[in-house]
Length: 107
Image (cartoon, rainbow, N blue to C red; front, side, top):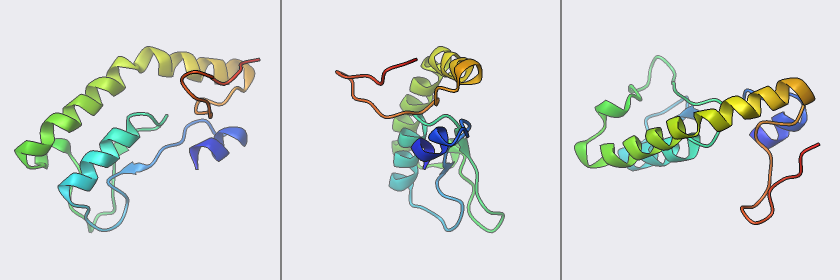
């Protein structure tokens, strides 16, 4: 979704951590935080009729992986700011495909 949106010029894309409807279990919420840390838009958000998504409400054994994902996200803030600036100036999508050994080409 975010890759397609980026190509269409919608750079601010991301999933609602934990999904918008229903109530994911703690393990799935951890995975959502881990995946969401690498998307441009990152928030724990859901429908009013669902359980809260804040990480401190998770069982204690699930807090450390979420903390690690959040730390990783904040460590990447300079990269996010640079990517959004590049997108603003030249239209290069914030989230784009590539591999570690073969990063996407920039204009």
